[in-house]
Length: 474
Ligand code: BGP
Image (cartoon, rainbow, N blue to C red; front, side, top):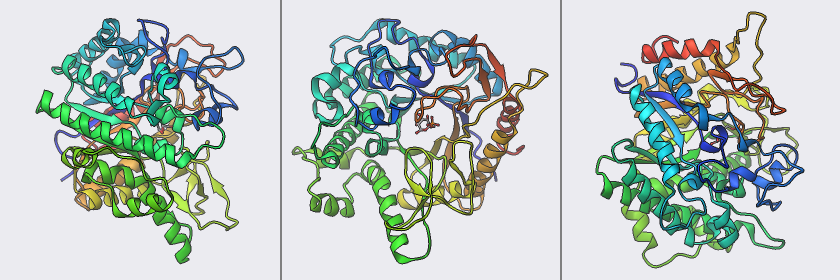
């Protein structure tokens, strides 16, 4: 049986991690631009340290990134050479609206994406567009505090309207927010929120989440009105929570972690706040304020499909245990003794992808799309000038096999797979350049030096075969 004939193979990037050119084309400054590399990054992205401008002391890797702003033709040609059916990219909000609340969009910014989509078309690549990949204009953060304010909904919808109309002929696949559940873990990066001393952080985060959920539902409505062909998905950071042991307290804690993440998809896919969230958030005094009509909006405009990132599963123990902690995509979890780990300490769990696919499909019964998956690793160029990234190939092969089993043996409905960072780009979590995910190497080094030259790695040729054989030759 295998993957469907029109399976959407490809790769995924985010504007702020690859474009650079943040002062070009009339672009404004965004939260993602002022997240520094180095020791303060975590405090900034989690909203514990206020940073709304660039200063002299820090390095801001998004400023140049891998300069796709100037290299996109070459890069998309390489995606075409690999046989990509789709390319997931995000729009830098501040290229279109430098402040975020202007009436008229910035034509130069719109033209840039016209050119990107034209390039995709040349190679028969279908764009899959993330409207906001952790992107929030600084101006709106200064004015209203980012997504903590309901005012953001209108600004976001104005952006959506401009995008849906302008790119009507080019784009029919959209994602409203990247990893919407990241708002709970990295609220500044996820939603432009930083905290003042003494604030009720949970309440602010859930209020902001509510605003995004309403905005997302209204974006679905608008997308369908503007073009009935449009398909809109939600996107969350997935990875099932395993109990650390069969001790009921561990099982319970794992269930809570899963619910915390599924909460967002429950609302976006089913159209209402699940009972557990209503009850618990109310008891904790953090249930968001809603306006009349919000519940109807959520109910009327659920998403068409569900997408997620999967890097690893999580292993959860009840508080008070002395188990070791593992790293992994800004989520805290216990170290799973049965798994191997990446160079960045992230667990490697291909079967976990099959488990997650089954869980998500069981829960929502909607088509799914894996829009991020990959191995962040250091790459070295050997004496022949080649990059033999066998670990990456192994990682991807094992995950694709797991997803194949989920399709062939478990019957899950999967639309496509876009691996993360098909071209090296900067890390969202750490801001590092040396953590590479690409099939294409970029000569940009950790200290900012490099020629920006692009180079095919061994995995480039491997993925080309995978796509050509629709996932049969692995
Ligand atoms: C996800 C983000 C991506 C991406 C990826 C890998 O959370 O959606 O933007 O960067 O994780 O994480 P990292 O860059 O920290 O290795």
